[in-house]
Length: 253
Image (cartoon, rainbow, N blue to C red; front, side, top):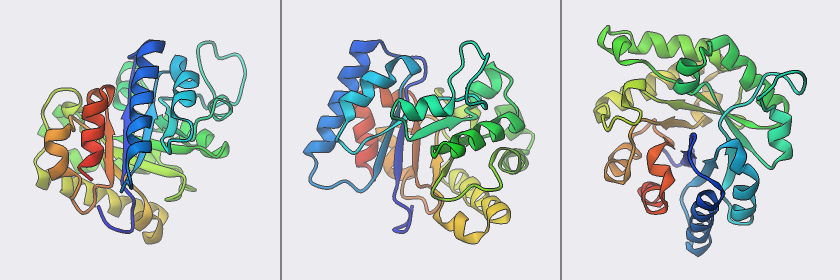
């Protein structure tokens, strides 16, 4: 985290929450934001599709950004059950998460598909939060850097900029498990990712692009992880579902 990159604290609610739950959580976070004298971070929440409207209303005027958890590559058409980037924009979203490990694993999403989704998001003026990260088997095999390099090369659009793209590094084996890499390991991978972004997009874009850490970040460890030189915030799963935990992580900035 540096003074030149404003930290982003992003919540991925995943498949959690009914209308009342989402409204309560969003209203509580909005109240925290409005009640703070100043904040040193940007905040993003990405609820399930069913809650985007209600959450958008609840956070209006608070400064909290609204995101979605996925989008289709096409603008419209015969794609039952899918949501396009233009629909998300129309619903009030400014961001969309693409390539989360759970999408890659559960739905077989490839780097090429993630790339196409990020491009679709950019075409509608949305900020793409592109997720990358290695599995436990890949880490144990010593392939951590190779895997992340390949995912940067294959998932981040050639026209990406620091303004329209965020990269979230999530070691798959640390998501929701309570396990986290060491601080040295987190910084090593983030610094490597920034180098790969520089190689693809140029040093200026790499210097400005926010790199988030995801994988069992919580209030108890956020104060150690967020100050790392190449960590510019967090993509938070479980801890984003309670006001105090999510605000506690943000306050660690």
